[in-house]
Length: 285
Image (cartoon, rainbow, N blue to C red; front, side, top):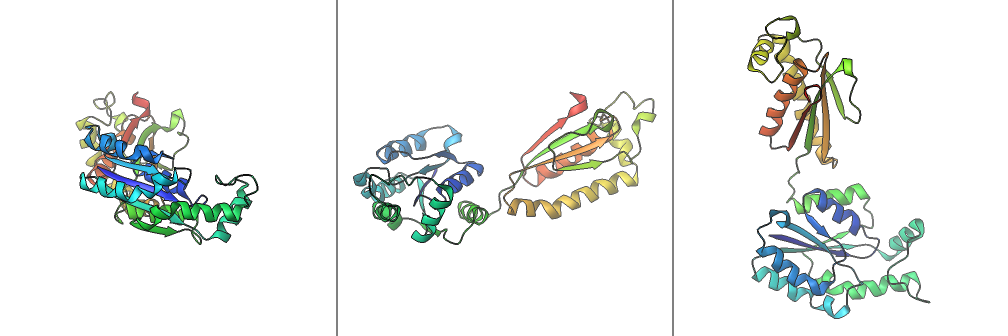
């Protein structure tokens, strides 16, 4: 089991960081009372449920001061129990935090009565010092925007390995309308049409005879290779930009033969590259 304890000053980007870990497949719990952390970590470590293999817990200054002081020992205990435990702390300069709270009009969780924002931030620094001191990694978000913070958290959590985007492939027929909410649409109506072959007309692009017919033609192979070359070049750029999902639609006239064949070709290719792939053949449903 891998456990990430995420903490930091209010306004430093903890929500962004936690959502980034969630996108990476972590089971995330925000604002967990620290006295529950030990039992939670041991319980998840002993469970057979793979949903908790990677878990991230957000801790903030509202936790009891005595519990915060005990956090370094809790981390040591977790490591001794065989839990791969890491602490990530987000830091930001006071002037930047004051500006962020002013712009968003959010209330700092430690402002009470006559306590001004600057004093609340300083108090929070003191309360969170035990977590900051035992952190594996500290990220200063003073000059960091949301996208840069996501990239840094993602890179740290993945060991600088880029996560693979999940891909939804959909075949369709243009005569039934172009699907909405897709990132890319490719038109394969220029390819030879099995519809005009009486023995092939009742079949679909899932049948070996359709595949054999289409692959006899050079233009089919060329279009497939051109589409794959395009995605081999550009999908890594989308992944670097933080895209977790891409939707690709392939259309022919009726959505039965050519688009289904091409969609299946892309599915095989992307699965070989390690992507999670979902396929929907709209007109075959």
